[in-house]
Image 1 (tube, rainbow, N blue to C red):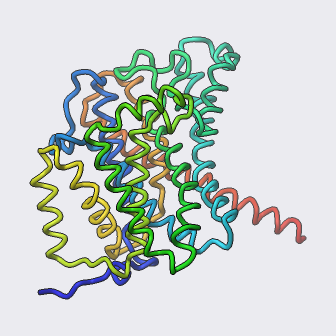
Image 2 (image 1 turned 180 degrees about the horizontal axis):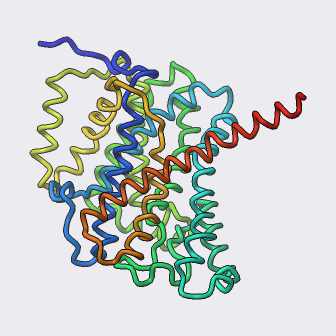
Length: 369
């Protein structure tokens, strides 16, 4: 039998596939949204990946995978941070510049152009764009998806960006990581307790799929529904679990083994259960296991991580395309959505990550002369 490889041995921080995996996942989300945005939410065809499953769909599996990767990588980040403040600063820098740019592009470019009202009148409707900006920037309230009648005549009407609902959950998991770090990771002697915490979380999440918590969840939504993550309590529980699974794989990387037999058995199990309700429960263990394995594979080249930018801008791009090209062929629509989102995502990366640094260098040089 082939010798086991421990996760800590196969992960190389300088040579791995997490970036390209994240980019591919963001493109799959765009592909998945094409079905809703082209055909509408009612009586739409099912995408090829979702046809494989009964209990899940492509979008939910991809989002879960994102949170697994996030938990795995954020554990490295908080370990390396000199303080909790510096950790939070890095997380804010990760989340907000791209989110701010996307929201401002939506409010001041897409909304005035796409609304039926005159541009000046749109911009004076402060109650609409202030709500859209503030609620979606603060990440504490329910996500606001539309402004006025923008995209009202699209097959999937009134939604400008249906992807941003996950951002508030992502920020919550960043905050959630602080007590997890202090309780289980900061001191090596406490690390062993995390497995008990994680096991309880696994059981709680698995039971949530049975509907046993529906009354509790409905009560939470009724009393705290204005708080976005609590209004989406089912999703929150699931995403916290998958994030925590990534953390688990990180801190126990010296005890988690990978070999060809384990990988093959995991894939076969997912395939055999895909058309059953058991899949939800099997996925809780096997999706994190396989996603981290794929991400740890060595890459022939390193890529710029523009996955977050693609994820943020994809939905508005798709809505704009279908707004102007209502009779476009579906497969051309998919291709255009992927290519344009990839291009704009890269431009956003340049604007946020590269351009300000170059301006700062120029400013410093002028100050020295």
